[in-house]
Length: 529
Image (cartoon, rainbow, N blue to C red):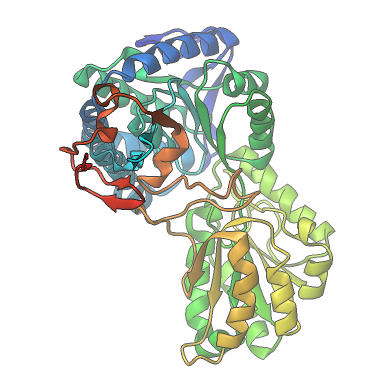
């Protein structure tokens, strides 16, 4: 029997207490590849939780500069091993090595870590607030318990449980992380965890600051997120699994931040379609088929107003989708799920334009697929016609008129993004105002005249949105420092003596932290007397 790879628990790469094993699959060929990895039992979960809680308590005494040093050191080590990491991710996901993984996602990932390092040092993310008259002071600070991070299959680096945005934010807040690797790319996660743990050792932080297991039974995942020792959880993945974890965490009163599903509606108003329909078609094809459509910001539904231009646009997209070769999905599960979703849309009344079946040949490929329905049908049955088809499948909704466009916008569930294309001469402006009023409340990020696929890693970015895009509309999974505050608690100090206060809340401000003093943001010291 082949020996399974080790898990990282409490500062040691050791054999798992296992209930089974698995191997990764190369989606391009459908063949199993790489080493054998363990499915951890509850004993591993318990061991990681106990070690994580001890690390969390030790980290409370660690200066913020040390946390920043860890994140910077990890980013450096990741870059030094970038070629091997990117090549491994390519084999396990079939995502393009270049430019996707090597030139875009890996640099983004190390950049996220460096942004988090800067925020950990700067401390302004703690939002210190000082009311001098009653002598009440507050700030955000570490949770005092480990954060569990569940990474998705579609971003093996930038959202990985042991390297992605949730990981960076949790560490920057001063929490240890228990990473749950995704089964689609276990070797990639192993390489990242090796460098993360080496960085912990380089800097001299508690050994259990970073831990990782590969897979657990579903019941042990819910056990992890609801355990008394856990501080919080960050999860990116399917809605069904997310809601099972949320139910367990909520019942135990444990914070959990979910990114689940999003169809990211794109409205192309009549003036824009007439003015530059071919240009928009090019943008849509690039966005819809990039990464085989496996982005959480993939434009899953395009809403048009009935007319010759709309029919011409749909025909243009049919020809483009049929001409483009289908690229691999991320795995066999994704292939099955996409087929089921397309059938569900057809059952709900959508008409197949092209595709709809597994592509011929080996590997996890599905035909590039387009469907259409009417605005009336969408308004009548919006829930079923918003079934997420995660992959290279898209739905056109054709409205009769502006009133129906507005009603369609008001029928959407919560999404990460929503986009409206308008003409440059102002002819669409009145209709834009009507559609935007409905759409704005249903999306985390509103775009004009650009597809939603790209997510800039900047402080103002919101990668969140109303349910069911996420579990809470007030938080973002991308953007430092706002993403950090998900993994922090608000601590208030009432009439606490000056020497006993944390540095951010003392009268002097030698670190230059932005603080709200008596309602005004300032870098100044508190004026006493």
